[in-house]
Length: 501
Image (cartoon, helix red, strand yellow):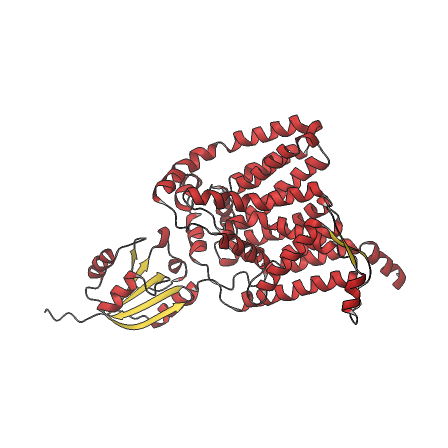
C-alpha cells in the first residue's frame, strides 16, 4: 500500500513534468473551449468555401485568391473531407496545432536555457490571447506558428547536438514552413543570418548545414512560379494593407502581450522583464525589506551582465526578422506588413520574458510576477470568451430567416468570392450576389433587375454601415431595419409598389 510519504516523494521527483502537463492541460482547454461558439467570420467562410475545390484548383488558385502558398489549404481540404465543415471541424486543426506549439515552446526554452525557462515560456504561450485567438480560427496562422517553432527546435538541436537525423527534419520543416506562408521565409532567413554570424561555431557541421540550406532553397524555388505572378500584380496594383508606421510595431508587441483590460500593463511588464532577460540584472548584495524601502535601497547593489549571449542573439534574430524586414520592405514597396503574419516570432518574445522572470531567485517574487501576468491575461481572455469578437453571421442569417416573408429578395455582398451568409442561410428566398468592390452604379443596376414584383429588399453586407451601396439603398428606399451583428450588416428596405398597370 502506498504511503503518503511515497506519493509525496514521487510527486516531488516528477514536479517539473507534472507542472508542464498542468500548463499543457490549461493551454489545451483554452484552445478547445467554445471552439464553435462564434460564427465563422468572413476569412474563415472564405477558407471553408475555397477548400471545397479539388487539389489542382487549390494549388493553382491559392496565390491568386489568398496571396499565400497552398499547403494549409491542402491540409484543410483533407481535414474537412474527414471531419466535415462545421465550425468546430474547421477550427480544430488550428486548435491542435496551437496545443502543439505550447509543447514545442517548452522544448525550445529547455534546449536554449533550462527546464524552468521552458516551463515559464510554455505558460506564457498557453495563456497568450494572441496565440489562443489564432488557434481558434480556420486560417493558416496556427500552422505558421507551429512550424516556426519546430524549425527553430531542429535548428537549435543542430547547433547544440549535431545529430545526423536533425538535418532531414530541419529541411522538411523549412520546406513545409515556406509553403504555408511567405512570412515563414523570414523565419528561415533569421536562421541563415545566425549561421553567418556564428559560422565558426558550426565548423564541424558547416558542410552539412550548408547542404541542408541549399536543398531548402531548391525545394522552395517552385514558390517563384506559384507566387511570382501574384506578387508582381500586387506590386503594380497595390494591396489592402496600409503602409505601416512604428506604431504598428508597438501594436504587434501589444498583441503579443495581451488583450482588453490590463493589456497595457502586460506590455510594460513584458518590456521590463525582457530587459531583465537580455541584460541579466541581478541583485548582488543587500535585502529588500518592505517596511523599510528607503533603507533597503541604500543596502542593495545590483550587477548588470550578459549571460547566454549566443542564445539571446538567436532569440533576438528570431523576433526581429519577421517584424523588421517586412516593415522596412513595406516602406519602399507595396505594404505587406500585418501583425498576425508575424505570429511565428511571438514565441521568441515569450522566451526572452521567461528568461527575465527566471532571473528572480526569490521564489516569492517569481511566483508574484507570474501571478500578475496570469491575472491580467485572464482579464483579456474573459472578455474574449464572453464577448463577440467575430462577425455574427449565424445570428444575421437566423434573423433574416425568421423575419423574411414571401415577396422578399436578398442582395448578398460577394466579398472576395464568397459570403459567410451563404454558409448559414437555410431559407428559401432568392439570393443575388453583389460582385466584390461593386460600384454604386453596379448596385443600382442589379437592384433594378431584381426588385420587379418584390415587396422588400434585404441587403447583406460585410461592415455595411456607411458604405456606398448602403447609403444608396437607404437614400432611395424606406429602411425598415438597419442592423449590425458585430460587422455582419443587415438592411431591409421597403420597395415602392409599381402602379404602372
